[in-house]
Image 1 (cartoon, rainbow, N blue to C red):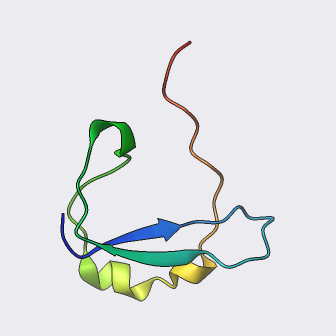
Image 2: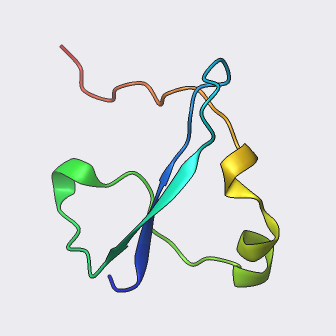
Amino acid sequence: MQSTIERIIRDPEDMEPSAEEPLGLYIVRGDNVCTVGLVDEDLDNSIDWTKVKGAAIGGTKHS
């Protein structure tokens, strides 16, 4: 993928704002895929990502 951005979404109790880190060219491997898909750029640009908060996504591996 090219022109990628990693969004770092902070926990609701964390006082630090969420952040975006530009990554540029990024190779996707099976061990680090969460979601890949098309993006509605108008909707995406209308969101202030520094104010978005959320809990961590749980693991998917079974023990």
